Length: 109
Picture 1 (cartoon, rainbow, N blue to C red):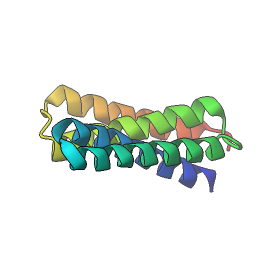
Picture 2 (cartoon, rainbow, N blue to C red):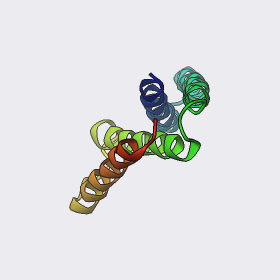
Picture 3 (spheres, rainbow, N blue to C red):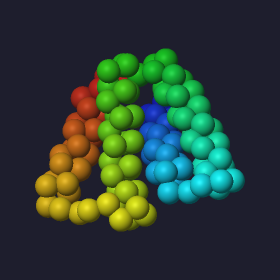
């Protein structure tokens, strides 16, 4: 169950990073709504990460959480913010995904 909580925490990390991207693109009231989304997503992500690390090894949980956030944020950037796509970006995203899966596979929990 805590792996599911950790995955959800990682998805909220993607959400708070994406909200930061929208804060940069907007102004006025819209900017404040995106900033509120950032704060809410950040809070939920951290609380879920804390919950997951109560039973999962901190090093593994943090690496998986960061990996989900990094991969998700890069993909969000590509699909929604028109970030550039290159062979090397895709290569390293795939490598990162493999590392996250590897950490999960060798974890004792």
